[in-house]
Length: 364
Image (cartoon, rainbow, N blue to C red; front, side):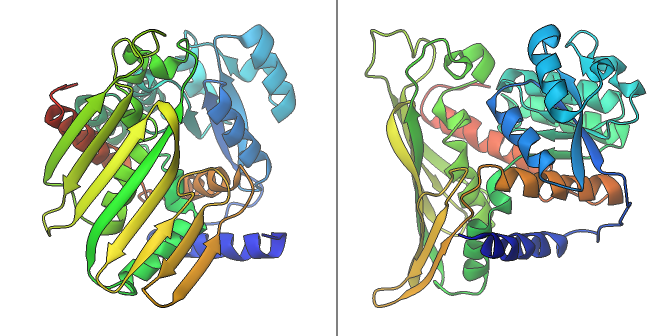
């Protein structure tokens, strides 16, 4: 995909998003400033996305390594060292007018605390998914942001992806007819037992909390329904490496929607499981494969005779992040409700809790 195609697809994505919210009120010369909370891989990508935009910028950092990584990142983003905060001094960010919003790129179990603290400091919150490790924590985050009159958005980047938006348009136009079934999967081999994702206290659960949430959320999004019943089974075959002490290695589950749509999903930390989503209607099928990667998401739409659409999203790692950062900046400027508000994250956690109950392993 060349730059012209990317610009066209990005414009279509933003136009689709703008139709759902208040128009952007331009404020020339003042990009929305984000504080990055947690300087890991995901914050690095988000920060690089901000560097590509005229509408947003990184204006502060929150890290436990201020003298090393903090100063290194501050130099990268042109941030004064006075805007490097520790987790202990984070609350003083309320006094920094350059920070309009925070980006929470921390382990799952820390999302609630720093969302609530940011809200109390008067800062808007863009929080990575999963929103939290329980529906109760999600509700606390929503309540805190409402009480502080700040916006809360969950970073479901695929809601901003051109191929996902194209699939949404095809479904709503009736191209594949009445929806019947979904197939979804996403997983990877997590080899290092020291990864925070393999620590149940930090992750809050197994692979469904990290990668399984992608197809789960997409199915809710595309069907416009909330799942009504669930089945689930978990398994752990690796009993020797210590990677899966306290969580499952692999999970398979089904969800049935009130209309009768059935979804079958799989997720794992034990093998390379490419992200795939198939959406079957009575007149055709949509396939996203890869469905949830940072780059090159590929959509095909076909029936038994013809290929109707063949779209590939940008091959740029920061593209989704730039679109979501700019969308939330628009909401911060105008007071509009984000496309993926806290309530969206809560609904996913309610579904995940139901999946674990169906598997006989309740997490809440």
